[in-house]
Amino acid sequence: MDFKDSSSLAKSLLGMELINEFNSKTLSGYIVETESYDMTDSASHSYIGLTKRNWPMFEKAGTIYIYQIYGLYYCLNIVSGTKHSGQAVLIRAIQPVQGLEWMKILRGTNDVLKLANGPAKVFSALNLDTSINGQNIFEINCPLSLKPGLALQEIIADKRVGISKNTNELRRFYIKDNIFVSKK
DNA sequence: GTAGGGATAATCT
DNA sequence: GATTATCCCTACG
Image 1: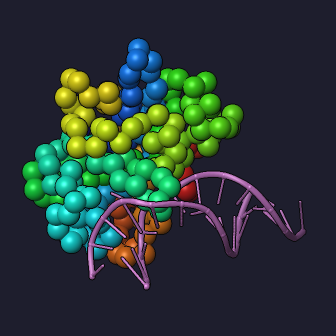
Image 2: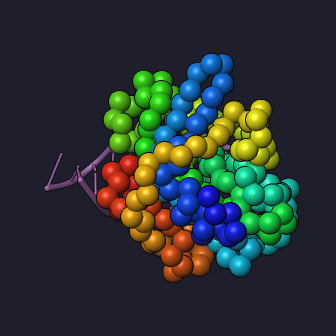
């Protein structure tokens, strides 16, 4: 994995297996879509500097940053760069791997394509919890972890989704032709 | 299968 | 007081 900046991490996370293990149960999926944010980017939470919400973005690489959006949904990010640099990668979609049946119940659908094809869907399909906000994904006691998954794939860089500022930069990355991506 | 709009509350100004 | 790194349901055809 390449943590030197958020776009590098966003690309190198593609294909990795994201795993949530707790109570001897396992839910996981291959990361197929990500977006990068940093302090130079007016669409980023870190653009305005350190705040009560975004503090995990200013921690070291591998820190988990979870925020609530639209009063309803939660999204998962992984921090990149050096400490205090204010960068993170939004996990936008995963391809379900382990715990499909449980994910269907958590998500209230039997359509595998729609289990985790969106950032708030990823959060819910993996049964994540806001208590891991600020933890580091490489710590042994962190329920969330990463391991190698898919072989290297062709990556598409595209415009990000759902933002109103700085919309032209190609900071959304996804695996070419993967059907679990949120938006073609 | 797709376009449109409503839900809903923390965060920052 | 406005904005928001989203999702789902409804209507249409």
